[in-house]
Image (cartoon, rainbow, N blue to C red):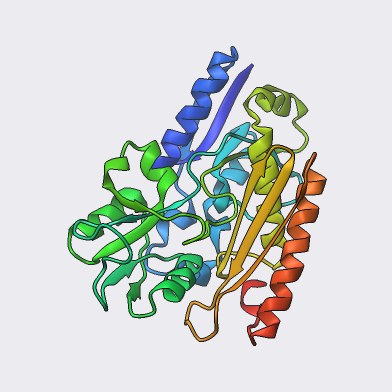
Length: 309
């Protein structure tokens, strides 16, 4: 089968698309890439939460699918909106790379080693909230751009440290830049972090069939639970929300956290575990944890309105 993959043109996005291309070619398909620049790649002077959210990274790719220029689009799953437009479906979730966050710094070996008032770069409201909860003395500054741009800004001395997804660094053979990896108990990952999702038009069952060998069911169960929390909370990148699931045998355990990026109210956490034989059970667990989390946020005087749009 001849297949065209729509992809962003950043080095990491191209690595991900090439990875999927190689796996599909092993299945006997003929695969080409269609590189595209998205609005999310072009707007670098404002945080994503102020300009429309992470959906800016997928819109142009969806247009290519709709117009028949491409058959599938490869995304970092944490960039995929919780609700896809009508006519589109998440057809495949692949095996997860390291889901954790990493500290990158030329001088300091850990978060604890950073001096008081050190400048840390991130544009993720989730990371801002979790960093403020752990180290309220730090100065947290916005950091946009692709992975290479972020590392260059660090190397130029604009920051003492930056926080990035470990998965991206590992995929681009930049693991040597990692000074410390945060345990999920220290910094809970974003929903879907480290996993690749493949989006197609829902009217293309033959493409879904071609992707079936790439599906990793254990990862899909975990991210389904995580994304269900985010969906139920009105999740977008304008919400400081973390959700992370682990699978032990047939039991799925899910943790979530909500924080205030301004650090005015304490971090709220919720967790639950349940058997999860299918995606519906995983999503039900996500809804249960979201209900706990919502009650906790309201109890401490927080508001969920900011993330609803």
